[in-house]
Amino acid sequence: MSKLSSLYLAGPKYYYKNIVKDKNNLPKWTETKIKKTQTIKKIVCGDSFHFLVWKKPNTLELCHKYLKKKEYQLPKNETIKDIASGNRTYQILTESGKVWSLANRNEDKEVPLLDADKSNFEKIRPVTFFEEEKLFVNSLIMGRASGYYLCNGDQLYASGSNADGRLGLGQNIEGERMPVYVQDKVIKIFTGSVATNFFFITSKPDLLYACGNNDSGELGVDSRVSPSTPTAVKNFKGSEILTVSLGQDLTLLINNEGQTYSCGIQTRNGLGVQKSIFTLIPQLKEKKAVQLATGYNQNLVLTDQNELYGWGFTEHQFPTDESSNNRVPTKISLPGFFTNYLGSKDMIRIACGAMVCFLFLDFNNALLNDLRTFYESKKFCDCEIGTLRNKIPVHKSLIEFRTKLTIDQIQNKLFGEKSSINKEQTLSFLKWVYYDEISDIEKLEQSFNSLELTFPPSGDNTLEKDIVQLYKDDDSKDFKILVKIEDEDDEDEEGNYEEIPVHKFILLARSGLFRAMFDSVNVKENTNKVKDYSNRSIESLQILIKYFYTNSIELTADQDPKLIVDELSDAVEYYQLNDQCNFENELLEIKKHFDLN
Image 1 (tube, rainbow, N blue to C red):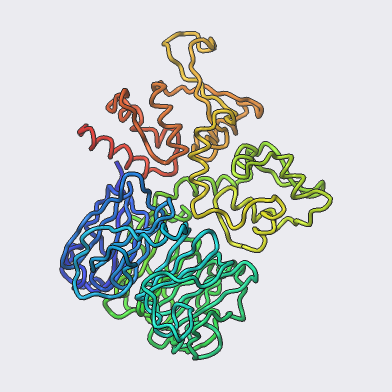
Image 2 (cartoon, rainbow, N blue to C red; image 1 turned 45 degrees about the vertical axis):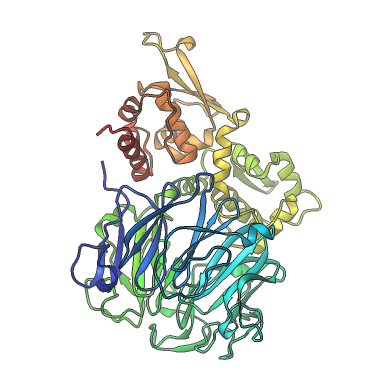
């Protein structure tokens, strides 16, 4: 079994003595004591003494200098959707639209956003305000002693400290412990755990707004005045932005083309210049950035080629083997374990705390990675949409299930006589269909409007939820795997085989074996069934097929766990799966649960 997901960090050892084995400061990446057998979905960091790890399944682990490690689990009927961190408070958003809090202060009815004197982190507590006000929370972020919530699709609420006008409510309001409405038509929100300001994007008008502390010019509004109400950033439209990351005196921004911009005082954070407008970072202009992370002083940028650049570090924060100019972006070597995944998109994750940097692998995105690669290959499509001169190949079952429209309806609505949708808008729509990418908001919204679909989409990770539902939709399954149930010499006798229904595109996206089979001259393009010659039981193959949809291995009470583990132990190699670590981790959890070691 290969080594599984690991968490590495770099920073002052003093703050993390219970988490790493190294007795010295950590000027380079050091592996932590976080269990390798537990995949990590996200890490957020509070102040310099603790951080929170979101683990699978549905568990959280607090790593604290004094409390050491403490694990929490939400109620069984709640599923974690996201987590965010302020200075000394963590907030958890669940799929039900509810908010939960883990803080160093006992809070029952109020939103715990302000600092406190005692560190107890006793238990996760529900924040009842949103449920009482009938607000469904779609997303949340936290700054320093402040919180921001996107509710009911596009309504922005804020709470906590309003110092420097960081809530966008005006200077005359000192602060609000309970969330207060700011404005609507908001589709994305950005801040940072050490930030005293925030940004958001609106759909109508298509703008990027900023608010809060601007003493260092970090809002990019060509001024040093701290706006207490939202102010538009003039040199960027909202639809041009991929993401924004806020540090103490510096803001980083990636546009849709992957170019990295910065603004604010950068003599402390690097680059040696001071700008009050977003300026392209020259050292990264030839790189396509996909992720940002910022702390008090340190900054990390990850490119689409999984190259990591960092700057602004102190001598104990710079995770490199060699001394470097920490004032300009410098390429940082990744641990050897990570080099096996440099060709896998969207798996390496970066994060920054107040004084530390994090690096880990996220195997939970294996399904999206496979679907992205499947889409980009442009192979095995079974129908087309578009104009007569510009046809775009697609996969019928996926596009129909995600939109709840037929291919004919999609064709008529997007390319009918009254439609003005162009190829770029269609491609933006297809990227959302296949792998949940929302990069060009304006083009995506135009496609949604033409199809009479609700915009913005209902939330993050909608594709993964849809694929799980697709597994349950037997009527739309267009392919069958024939599994031999008797040891007969005549393999062509159909009575000796049992059928497992499946969507053809799922097999093609997730298994190199099936791609090779359909690429072979021995398999006709219009075939709707194939035989499995692996000699595995039908129970094992049914579990494997379900894994293709759900990314998890689930057993029923009447299934033999030892048989399943034995028969699937070589499935990664035989079926040529890309997500080796996640699959093996699922098998390992079953072995541990049933004590099969």
